[in-house]
Amino acid sequence: MAQHHGARVTAYNISREQVAYAREKAESQGLADRVEYVLDDYRNISGEFDVFVSVGMLEHVGPMHYPVLGQVVDRCLEPGGRGLIHSIGRNSPSPINAWIERRIFPGAYPPTLREMMDIFESNRFSVLDVENLRMHYARTLDSWMRRYEMHADQVEKMMDERFLRTWRLYLAGSKAAFTSGRLQLFQVLFAREEDNDIPWSRAHQYATQASLKRDERAVTND
Image (cartoon, rainbow, N blue to C red):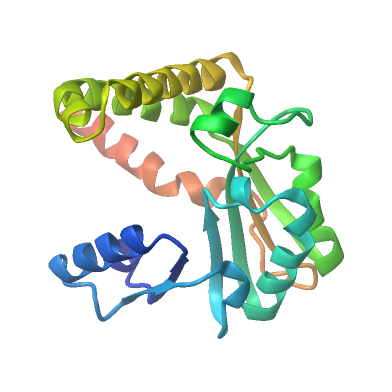
């Protein structure tokens, strides 16, 4: 967002390693003056922002805390702002796979769209758009698997054979879950309910793409 759109970004994360890595990347890309990485819990977010984005976090929040997350968004989202929640989910309520719960993501829970509404309803947010990107995630997992296997020897040397097999199974099983529809990838765009400055259609999302296609056809015709 900072690199491609000139945004000033404040990013919260509770992983010390991820924050350290992200700060190094921002510094190396000349973005340290536009991106601030904060090592802290999302519930302690302070300040006001034009946009609130949550990517891959909701699965670890837990449904009982969704109203609190909504209150955090309500507290820091400026009038006329936009919010986006990007989360792995399910079509119907179900606990996470027991093996993944034990070996990969203790305490994780992929919600349904209905369960996610607890973020919005009590804080008077209007859902503007919903996308399901599960096939995108399946392709991403396929790429991760190929890269993982390219470095399998290195992974085993760093960790051990059990770790290697564990994450191999996790990546393959996750790809199967998204491909079969057992898992979804929801992306929900929302705003304050009194905000009427919203698009009439999705046409604006495809304007650039349509322009590029017209240019391609013109080149081909020439």
